[in-house]
Image 1: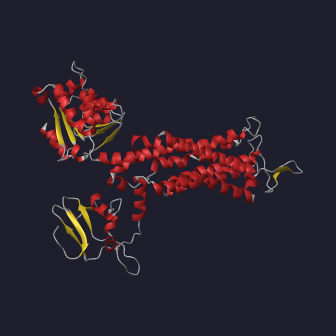
Image 2 (image 1 turned 180 degrees about the vertical axis):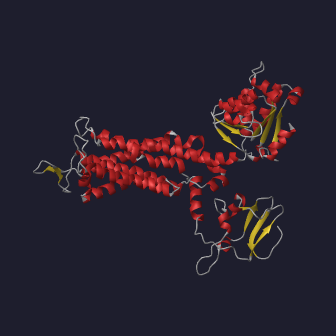
Image 3 (image 1 turned 30 degrees about the horizontal axis):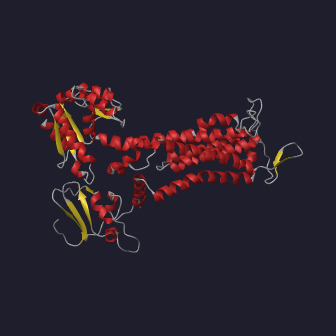
Length: 510
């Protein structure tokens, strides 16, 4: 018991200010289980309901052993202690379960899963006695260690060391959720944009089931024209850098409780797709509304003098569609590599080349070619180019305005972190700080690794901690004050227990 408690203090699950509550066999022998549970509920739950108490004063840690847990999970004549134990555990900063059987570990996870909040549970273990717990949790992680590979073989993810859990959750888990959320919403969005103009077209063709797009476009839209950009996005997108996610774990709160896959977000993407589809269809319809028959029986628009038929109309709508949904994904991309540029702009180029070849060559294996010379005829008209650019701009404008207003009025912590990263990215040429700036170290400080703490930098009025890159000041051209003279003296937290004071002048003790 003492060893387990010491481990919790060493891993910072328990702090010095944590009030330890015990629910052990030794205590239940001195008092009845009913009295112990009543005392715990009175200690933990009642102060929480009282107002005017700070969170630091209500920091509790619970220790329970296997024998007592068996009694708690059983429904006795004096009452059901499951709900009381669950409520007490939810109001504690950490719960230490020691001397547990493998089945009891799984029962703890099952109890948490069945709570009214229905949280997503994660279990991590390194031995065969942790297999039941790993299988019961939503996400099971096995550590490949000296106790064998049973836990790793029965887990969803396997890691070599426990310290890798931080990067796995805060970095890779964060990235995975952002990518999969964008992937799901974007697929709905681009297919609403694709199908809804076809639906609207039926009201103008007498419900004759005449397709708006050519069969080649219908087949290749989701296979070739728009598939690779979102596929690459779901593999390599990094909306925030890895260093920022590891340095600021609070950014994970932005994606908790499935925030990006809720109904309001889904309805926004769906409404945006419907709006863009209406712009595609009616924009092309009203821009080329007035048509007349020529002497050879072809249709020509009176205002643009352009040959115009239903295939030209459908090709114009489809061109605006492909460019809009691809540029929309480009606007959502934060991490650009040469692969992103190649895939996104290459997909648009492939569509143009395919359309030119599909309509510019007489293919011998086709019985008829209804798209012959349609695409080239459309691009030979100046108003068609203007219409394509205008409709793409109108379609993307509402989403751009929404993003700008949200970032300006109520930015999320992730958006603030993105802004901080852009500000801290500077030219590669950086000069060291002048020699008259002294770094004064406190006790037990490691001067080789310097980190800026949030409490110290908040006094400067900056919402985010300085990155390590700011330890190098870039002197502007022509002289002038550097970074430290601009922000004044500040306190730095070192990787040890000491502190450092950054200010010009001779050394003094801290």
